[in-house]
Image (cartoon, rainbow, N blue to C red; front, side, top):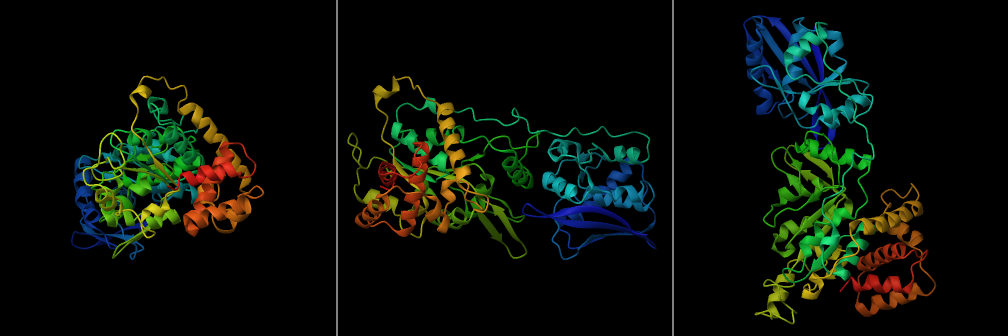
Length: 503
């Protein structure tokens, strides 16, 4: 007979089932692993051999063949160590063959028999639950697997514990399921009360948070653009359990989870402007998720936007519109979600002082034109921002004032506006749960214009030479402003404020 152990291969956050088949045949000693392995998989036999030697388990003088089926599925990583080892022990009768087949197994073996943590445990646990199986994973990943309810979890720290557990000599301690209580999710430690002055920019941040809009801040150095951007997550609604699980799966695949095994607050990602296309959108040899996927259900902040390479900026256009990115390589095609909120900041010119009445730009106006040309034009990312806000320098008098309103008060208004959008958009409107995702017929039927507002908006669009894309973005922003102002329909004042953010 052939011992069969269930494990998985990953294609992004999608889990593909893999069967580890171990067969011992009479003949000269020979150990093969087949099924298109990469280097880490091919080295498993050496780690398993050393592990068994440390435990006093002798390999039989036979030909041992390990097949990873299906053979045409690309397999990589060290998490195949444990299922291969258990398959061998089941074939040799060290553990019961019928019981071990009820589990999905993953884990990396050390030379002394201990089991190291691996990435991808949460999506594997969800897959195991969907198949009616339990999971055997490293002890360090137990909390991560525990977020899947009603799942049987075995989390040994070494391979000897598995042998003793299945032989009935001892029992592995039960892994307590994790629960989504109100105290689980966290808010950021930052508070908008720390930002002095900048009332107009704070209002724009509130609109962006309420409607999920992308926002660009333009202003001189030291005006507080980065400080406000870092406080964006403090005014967003708390992450929901569903969003937390989905975001955690991305971080699990990337191997970036802490000991709790759950992303408890909305991500805030801030890549440096020297980041490559692969770092931003994903890629590399193992096609790992990039910054735009790590910011899923959170905020992606790009400081000094024109300093990013033009090809990097241009790579944002498609994921901003579609909400996902497909990374294609010669042997792999992986799709990751990219439902992030883009907040960007930039100086008005390279030196930062164009239009500043107190300090003159020394190369105006060419300094401004050359700098902003990197992101301007319909084919680049500038046209994807719903709000473009000018941030002035902070007056010295504002530094002495005590801010009376912080993130908690603003977040309450944002949550109230989001609730209006949830009620307004029925389930059949796919992504349209926030105003920024309204598109096509949904935009026309759900926007709600007061009498005379459409004529006013069309006249303004004609005079300002606004494109069709920008026209729709103005409608979405105006709808969010109306929600914040508790207006059932979009009024002329809401449109005027929305137009002010397209300067």
